[in-house]
Image (cartoon, protein in one colour):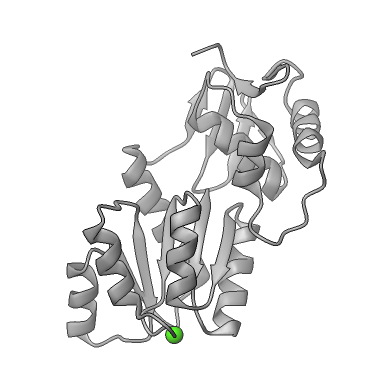
Length: 220
Ligand code: CA
């Protein structure tokens, strides 16, 4: 899951980014409205976390432009503007949810998951495929009924594959899901995570489609 974090406060940006990454999200962080627009033109995101008071272009204006152009991706506003009229304006401008600073990271993560579920049209609960189940809310992964311990990246990788069972995802697509801008990616990073996943699950769970990428489950 790739998230665009638009926040000009370095301390909040830093801590929210860190919290999201440790929860398995891939995060690109920008600190003004224009950079946010550029990022949205050039990358595909699952969700935007948007501060309202931003340099170069106000968050509300950015959101209105985005909706005018027909973008439907979920936007969660995070801002200190807690007056009721501001909240109403934010929601009227096309925000999907609203969180007032200072907020608790656990609440932010829960709201993100709720938005992403709604977008995916999925009810609460684990995603299941054969003997494998993964719960995006609790981060619990089970294989043949047994809990499996995964790192944040392994979890994100498995989540990406489970969301599109039967579909082959290329190494580049998986890298995109796992790493934000400026994060150092070893050329064989995806292979290494896949190797660990296979060891923790079963060698046959993740198929390697030579020269194309990786797949979970049967061909779609
Ligand atoms: Ca701000």
